[in-house]
Length: 130
Image (tube, rainbow, N blue to C red):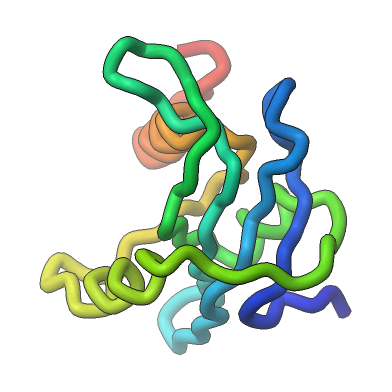
């Protein structure tokens, strides 16, 4: 069984030039109503800038279903320290009155592309063809 414990760092299918990016598990949460959620952070990921370019940065909080996480990652890469913003973001997510939202699609480095694929999945459209 893979190590999906808090602090575990994982490589994933990164965009070109972002090979040092890692997904770090911050919390592994179980629920009775739906599958487990891994709350992660992404380090050295491409973060979209105001001018449309991407620069390496940190995505402090990224909730993924266990299946989406499994589809994202390639191999375990030791342990890593979470960004300090992770805990605050996790608490805000857990206390969100709208309910716990999470991604059910794989993460491949670009958050905006992940959001588009998630929205396409929700409405039943193939994001690759849209």
